[in-house]
Length: 197
View 1: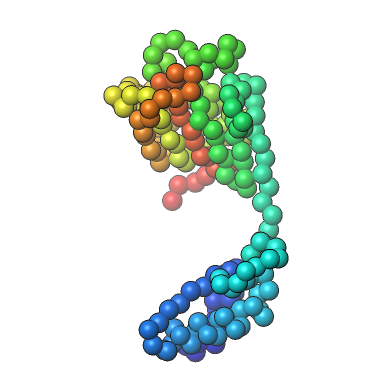
View 2: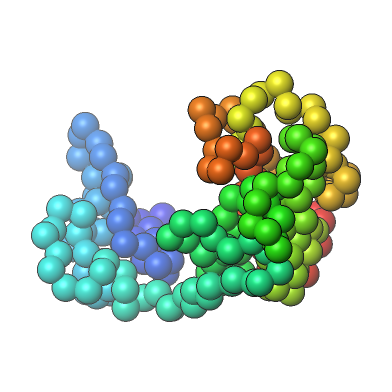
């Protein structure tokens, strides 16, 4: 395949950056030369990596605008800082960390880490519901613990909210959580129907 044909194939994708290197001028060197001289004329939305681009954001003309929607619900505790309960961009929902706070009182629930984990997940469920989702839409969670020794106790509660097809997850011990909480759980969900491969 000629370098020119390869460049043509490469430019069919919405590329804004391409880097090839070689110690000697060879096929890849030819592609680099052809690419840097051909792409700006074929795809004006692209800007060279070494340029000081002062126009629109690189590739802006070639990208569709994504819609951002803020999701807040009175059925979950209000944010205790300058953030939203959740933000949806395209089909991806980012849920802020939920503490085990009672909606009515705005205080942490009594009963220790398991009770707080349950309440945090209930709060998350209300935010999911506000976006037309449920726990099956969750694809990733992060669990923050005041004490990593509570890991197993939180797991006991956690697995009652998610099916056997668990979301991906990370868990960390942190120095402290807001309001003296014992656990905080954040999540990423995908809106709409999901099917398993």
